Length: 275
Length: 275
Image (cartoon, each protein chain N blue to C red):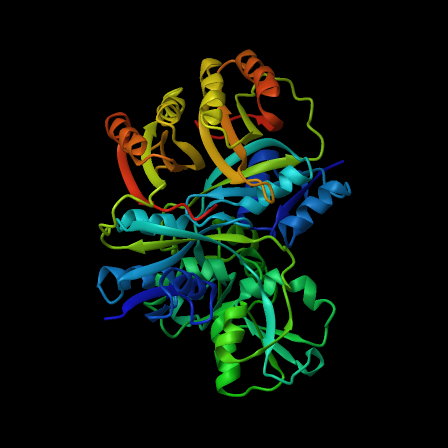
């Protein structure tokens, strides 16, 4: 049986690209129109695996997605960092002078606003999804309409890229995580990163104490984020990512944190997507 | 001369409420349609003071606003925490059964989507700003149209609140900061909080070392957030907020951090908006 991979958005999206990078094309894709729908499909077992954007260099952490993973006790089992490129694409044979309208997600239109200042005749129209527009252009052979989507959408739907990298901010790296309802039993060989969550009271030095433990156990901190615990004044949740060389060092840190930190939780252990 | 206060959004918005809470109503309000426009008005001296949302409990830190403060070397000189309430409002004498359309900002519509499921006949129409719609309803005496806005908008524009607190998530606290181009010379009496930024190399234990210093100097950490430094692998920026009882303790911490941390920067010192 093919693995069913739930992605946010449509075929040809960046989420689809991450699914292909991880699992190749022998998969069944389940397109979800929201992150909530994606989580639902994992919980009701209509998908085996989910691909979820979790942070990017423009907007920072996507806190609602952290909350989904935390609330529904999903396991992070992998990660990938992707540089987001917005390309302008249309039917083969069309040039940019033929384009009357661009249909895309409001966020993609916003990120490419500067580019379109050079083309005041092109009308920008909000649509639900970037890649889905590419599909519609191909299927209905729409002349004069362009999509803003990743290059994978041009490949899948046989569209021509009229202009590369039209986003204003050129470096928009996005981190995606692979999430599953149950932690798979993959062995520990390739595991060198962990995502942890814990709570601390607002007592002076409490975080420093925990970070000292992590440092003593040879954990390298790659991310830290505090969030106030809603309705509990002076109590904070911390989301921490660490990388390590030796899994035994990590297990030692884990054992100490279980004792020292409140509400300690392992969101996942997986292979570092960087370097 | 009245102080000119730049706010994001229009009169009657939550940003306006914060401006009133801080400076009373003897102010001239400058309505800005984006945070970039707000910063521009400080830089070109067309406004003295800016009010800017910086984080909320639903979405976390508003990283682009941190970037604006950092890039343009603005000073945080105050803060306020506000619980965001979305109220449905229309002309006096209208009841909810009279309402045919609700015009509001896409984010407000999204946050109140659940409420409108009970009223499928009401059409939701995207508009640029929440409070500006309230103003338009009052000015043009629009029958059958409702706005979603804070209660201050109902007061200012003499509208009737048809339904209180229609947002799905009831606890959406937002933190606003007061920003200025130059740090005012206000004395140190009421100052018990500081926002700091520094960089660290990805060396094991480097953050723990800094947090130990802060703890030794009796600083209480209320927020910590790491952000990768774009285009510099393994280097991280940290945004840290601390509260303290004694300003001299803070000055000591500041002196040590100046020596120990790279690119150390004080984003502002101000009075804690909580408790």
